[in-house]
Length: 210
Image (cartoon, rainbow, N blue to C red; front, side, top):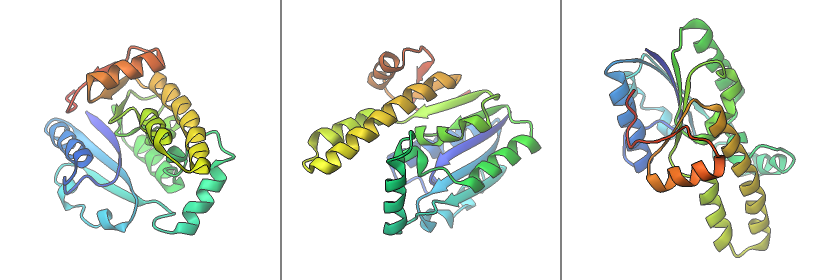
């Protein structure tokens, strides 16, 4: 099976919770399937070491977010997001060159499954909507944002977070409906997302095996 695997960050070395899970998922899938890996990194630091992934994947492409560590670019993106229906976390992960790469992989190869390893990358959904697809929910992302909003003291940040929570919860519900299967890592998350999204395509797995 040919799998297009979309990831946030390079999970190698697997030195954190999210990285450990993603790397081990790749390791298990690579035993029986061909993996075409595309990732979006926050900065150059984790783009340099592709060797650990090259042993598992047929191709490895890692793109760096255009705003990177630039405070001005980050601020401009936040301001532009005020006028967008997309949540900030999804909009900031949209890179035109990534979309071009996704389209090329899909057009050049017979992709049997698209694996989206985290909710914000579902922003590329339209480019693979006609393919079998899996979305991994490492957390209930909108709930995490809501909890942050509850403890935030600054009224302006609090209002911004509420706006983001509203947009992210809509995005989360919409995308969970569009994927053939949504993976969660805990039963509490599954129950929350099923109630929120009103769909029964959730499955609890610590590591994905097809």
